[in-house]
Amino acid sequence: MAKSNARVTDETLSTQPEDEAGESLWLTRYGLEAGTVTLKNGHKQTTAIDGNKMEILEYDGNRLVRKETGSIAAGGVVKDIEEYDKRGELTRRVHSELAASGDAGTTSHAYLRRDIAWYKDGEVSKELHDSMSVKASYTSSDIVNGKDVSDAQSLDELAGTLTRDDLASDYVGDIIEYGAGGKLFRKTSIAHAVTTENRTNRGSEMRNGIEAHDTVELSRQTEFSITQEMYDDAGNVTFQASFRDSFKEGTFEQQQFEASWYDNGQLVRHSSAEILQKQAKGRGLGEHPDMLGTLSLSEGRYGATTPLDAQSLLGDGQGGRVAESGSLLSAALTDIAAGGYDPAQAFTRSRAGAVPGSVSWEDTLYKDGKVALREVDTETVEENTLPDTTGFHTLTGLSEDKDPKYLRSTSHRVETYQDGRLVAQSAVEMRESAEDDARGVTSTKTHVDASSGSGHAVRNTHAKLSETLVEADARWNAAAQKAGSAVQRTLTDLLTLFQENLDPTGASGKSDQA
Image 1 (spheres, rainbow, N blue to C red):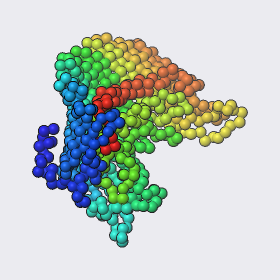
Image 2 (image 1 turned 180 degrees about the horizontal axis):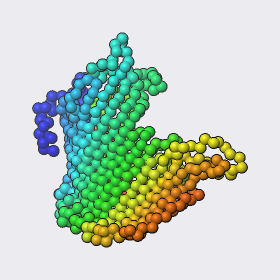
Image 3 (image 1 turned 120 degrees about the vertical axis):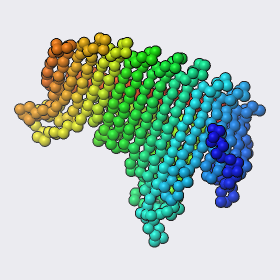
Image 4 (image 1 turned 45 degrees about the vertical axis):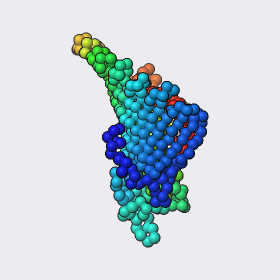
């Protein structure tokens, strides 16, 4: 924080206190007005503006509960916020910086960086260090006043046109929690990236089916990841986990999960999972944040006549929410809470709700540092590439001659070890097939391959059953249930971390101005 503040000297801050009309940028860009208001919680809030500097003080009676100061320099914004308890002791401090890279033309970059610290009995109990960067690039093939603006050198030249918008946002954050005696208890690292291509009508009339000042998303990809470590009082790692979600709108969602548990520094359990859900006709993928949600911008503001540069995209939305711990991740957290990041549940449905993809789960237990037990479950759903073309058959039941749209396969394996040596194993694999009988009527068969035993004494069994895999395999969705449960537990812990542990509870009120 000291280094950040040192970069922004009073001399620099005084270079750009006002906009071209002579008004403070705190008013014209951020809507702040000097004066005193009463907040919904009954607190008084006083705002003072002096050129490029501002100060907001919030009081509960005569007791100061919140103080916010800010400065604007060369278009960048620095804010500091402090919150106090009933005893007047500091409970939370926020420092944020919003700045642009100084790019010119129709491509721009900007970043928002924050440092938040929570205090208990005068000591730091939690920390959040995060940042979001945005890159925005606009092009248009319109003709404006007889000029082709496809090689426009400024955003002003694109005003009122139909633009192609290429946007990218990247979020990274570290949450550090301390236990008794100030010892490190848990560290959580998060990354969230969103890349989109949009078409935006910045004119005043409908064009190409797009309403005035509306935008249409053409493509979107997101990446979301979590890594976490927990420690005991001696500083030993007790738990490690990693999670990654890759999403491409209209195409697929893929997840990878891994977790390890330790006792006195020795590995006692390791679990891993992979989930892939493909887009299916009539059944979409889970909800993931779009760019406007990620930036906390309204469509009307985004579709302004003149395209917004990266600093405006970031500052107009997230720049006003720096005091909210989860603000930079709010869109992702909302979709997680609504079940948008749960592709495994698609594989727990019966045949009627099947979707193409695959899921695998592996769980290994250790004793004295050696493998003791391993369980592996998988499930795959594939499109039937050989559809029945023989048509309707007479003399068949209504349920006969139904060519399945998807075919399932599953596997289950259990391995037992002694002193790290495999002593027993059992496995079963099942796969469906669509087969025609002598009448040409299609039905689903399930092929079973099973084995059990130890060493060379392994017994193999093979069979073909006249029933679907869901009917034949009582544990057909074991992989999806186990993998989904582990992933959702990780995501629920993240929600709890932000909603209950980080965001302040009633420390201050909010007015529209604040």
